[in-house]
Length: 518
Image 1 (cartoon, rainbow, N blue to C red):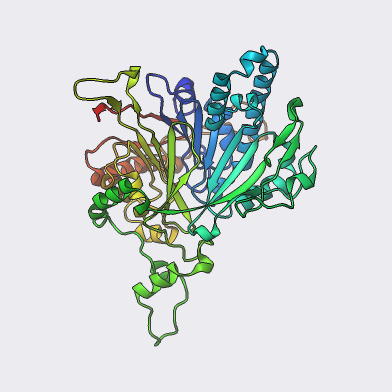
Image 2 (image 1 turned 45 degrees about the horizontal axis):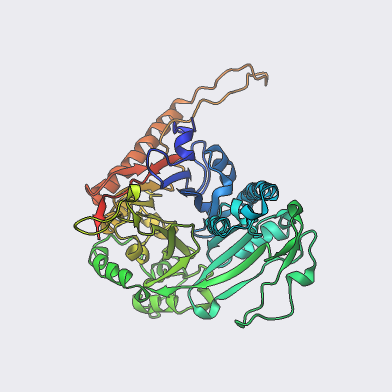
C-alpha cells in the first residue's frame, strides 16, 4: 500500500481496462507538510509518463508510487516558483539513469541478435516509434540517445544550467535533455542550441560549439562523440535549449469554435483579480492630489511593458494564444497562460482519435471510434480564462484551491483561487470531473501520525507523544476545511460530475468515453 491507502498497483499502472490515469505525487501549496509534498502530477499513457510540475522531493515520490522513471517522456513546468520546479534536476538524474540502463540492455540484446533481425525495416520502424514515446529502449537500437523534454516558462533553461552545469552534474548525463521555453513572440523563438558551458567527459568542446551555422539561419546544434555504455557515434548535445513561440487560436478552427461557446459562461465567473488591481493596491501611487491612473490605462501599461513580459512584475496572462508542445505518442499537449504573480501556464493533454476497443470498424451507420479523452492540469491561478477554449469539455480538470471563500483579498495579493472559483471555472468549461489540489498547509485531510518522543532524560524509549488538545482541535478544523473547499466548489460546479480533493498518491483513472459514430 502507498501512503494515503492507494494500492501500489493502482499508481504504477492503469489497469482495469483504463489506459489513461493521473497520479498526484504532491498536493501542498508552498511548503511540504507531513501529509503532502509540493506540486507534482504524473499522467500515464501506454508506454509513456508525462509529469506536470516537479517540486523538491518529486523523485522520491515517483519511486514510492512505483512509476517507472524510464517511461518519462517530458516534464511540463507551470511556473518558476520553487514548490513547482526545485525538484527538476534530481528527477532528471533519476530519469537519465533509468533510461540509460534500458538503452544499455537494449544495445546488449541487439549485439547478440542475428544481423538480419536487427536491421529489418519493421524493427527500425518499431524502434523509432519507441524513441518518440520516450521509453528509450528502442532508441539505442537505431543509434539514438533517449530524450527527455522539459518545457516551461522563460528562465527554465537558466535554472537547469545552474542546477546541472555549474554543479558538474551535466557530466553524468547519458541521455539527452531538451529544454523548451515558451515565449509569446516569434522573434524570441529559436531552434535548439547547446546549453552547456563545458563539455561532458569524452567530448571535445569544438564538437559541441561548432563555428558553422545551419541552413535555417540558426546556429547548428552540433554533435558530440559519446562512448557511454561502449557505444560510439555522433549525437546531438546532451543538454540543449529551444524557444517556442505561441500561436493565435485562430490557427485552429476547433479552438475558435470552443472560444465562442465558452465565452458567455466566462463572463459570469467571479472576478478575483483584474489587470491594474495589483498596481493600485501594492505599488506606490501618485502623490496625494495628483490624478489617478484609470483601470484601462493601467491594464494597457501592464500589457505593453515589454521589459516585464517574462519577469513576472506586472505580468498579465495573454488570452487568445496557445502553444503546441512535444508530447508522447498518441497524446497531443497544448498550453495556455494563467494569471499568477509570475508567468504561469496550464497544460491540456488530448488523445488522438483512435478506433474503439477491439479494433472494430464498419457498420451500417459508418465507422465507430472512441471519442478522444482530454485532461487539463492547471498551475497556480486566480484567473484561468485564457485556457478555457483548450479545456472545454475535458474529462478531468485539476484546479488549485489554495484558499477558502472569505479570503478573496488574500487571493488578489497571492493570485490564487478559492474552492468557489475552482468550481465555477470547472462548470464553465463543462469538465466531467473536478479535482481540487494545491491546498494551503492550514488545510489537512487527516490527523498526522503521533510522533515518537523522547523521555525527560533525552532517551528514546518508544514512547509516543500525544497531541496537545489545542493541536487536536486545530487538526479537526483543518480536516473540516478541506471538506468545506469541496462544498464550495460543488456550489458552483453543480451536478456536472464528481469532485475530488486530491492527496498525495491519489489516482484517477480516466475511462474511455462511449463510442461515437463519425
